[in-house]
Image (cartoon, rainbow, N blue to C red; front, top):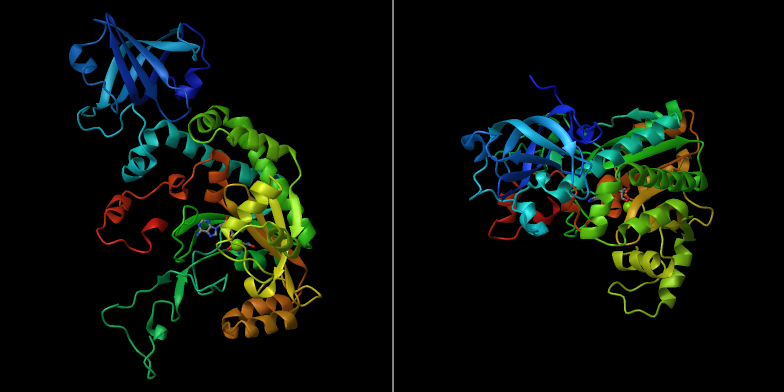
Length: 474
Ligand code: 4AD
Ligand code: MG
């Protein structure tokens, strides 16, 4: 029995002469006279382990099955590698094929595939170089996010996924119901009778864990959520998903300035962590996807973000002399073209925009003394636009109640949220980072659908003959 070698990542650390067993999937195979070469990868690192098989060492029926895509166990001895780019290679003595892959039909070939094609084989694309790198970086980012908050004493909480409150007040919730859709119960006035539904109320999937995080911040001081969120908004863009992951810290006794500083420190920290731990993966993105990724990350990790108020941002955009698709004047929401102008042309780095008009922001944001703007902040990044949205929260009972009423929101649904202001209220603030937007920024990937563990049924949805308005969101 040959000693188990563990991950390929660890095998590279072992000295020449060690007997190891490697497990993984064949990336490529090359046969030359008297010797066969296999590139084996188990996802633990970017680098493939080169397997060298001298002709005649292994039974022909085993060797013939070890083609691209096959899953293998290979035992042998580590030898010095004459090839560039790797220190050791594995000289095979024994091989077992767990799962062959018919080379005639296996869809992942050595030639570069388009992202569109890879999206159609989402169940196999995880074995490609690019997607291996995407998901290792996603893993590193997630770990860095927890590390950042845990090192600062924040309490991690899991906000509920099924909820009855639309945190953003934007009506973009997916419904959750057990009612028979073919035979809906009706009230006397003809509306759907949610009293008879599972929760006795209209319920849906959460669009944000913020309101629940506020409950916790007003008991544990500093907290964060990190979980799935859902939005049924019809934004057919490369940066919107129907299901995405959001990180939402919430801090008692923080004002907008503290919030902004924490967001900047946080983004720099997680970028530095990825630069430190995913060098080989980032090299790949720099080479294959976007040759500015590495220099941008190094630059961002080491420089201060820009800060402008919404009013200042509008002035810059008005002076730009551009024919905007969405015309600019004080009061309009910033569109992607405006966000990109500010980050890519004006400042050439991330920009924090604060103090937006109250009409275009959510009801919970703290009203400024001018009564026209709220203590909102968006962090905008080059290429991506908004990656963080946040604010100082309205902690004054009367002001909050007025805003809920002014926006026509159902007051009774927010009774508990109002009570947090009635009993022991405190100034507090927080923000939300979209994990996938951050991952796009770090990797340079152009489409948000290429940084998610996409569903195998996506292919069917994409191939639907009649285009569905939501299809690009999946
Ligand atoms: O700006 P948003 O809507 O803010 C909130 O949800 C607040 N409750 C956050 C808070 O203050 N705790 O969303 C926050 C971030 C955005 O900046 C973006 O990165 C991401 O979530 N996001 C999306 N990512 C992918 N697909 C979508 N449809 C997204 N909508 C928002
Ligand atoms: Mg936002």
